[in-house]
Image (cartoon, rainbow over all chains, first blue to last red; front, side):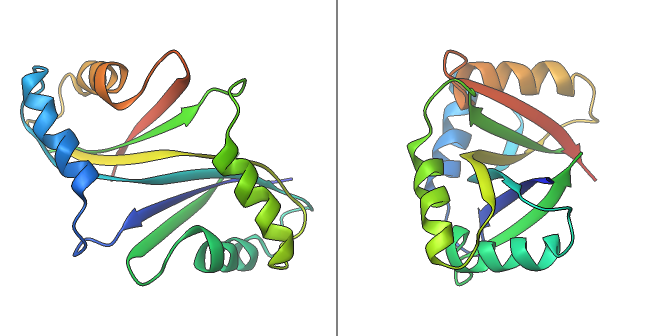
Length: 80
Length: 80
């Protein structure tokens, strides 16, 4: 029953207004020197089974439902 | 210039309608056996400096701006 984490982020060439808003808010809260803020989705889920075909399942799910490959990229990993 | 990733998730006892919607959509797309879907935010940012006080800075930022500690928890890690 592997627990999988998937991070879905806008591609680097796509504007990220949410990240820009956070980046502009941080100095007024006293946090200076923060750059390149990007905000995306973090998805956690549990797969049934013994962990075979995790790669195929997760990448198919991410590409068809969780991310829009035109504007987003995803990374995933198995959590302990 | 450490690159930091912060995952902000609703606490386990807080209802996650977005995760439930994805969990219900997956079987109709042919993905069975997926449970416990939770969806939160994934934030990437670059800190200026040589990496001292990363823990204090990141945890203060997360607790004051990036997460609402009443309903959300966060994990963070330094990338590469």
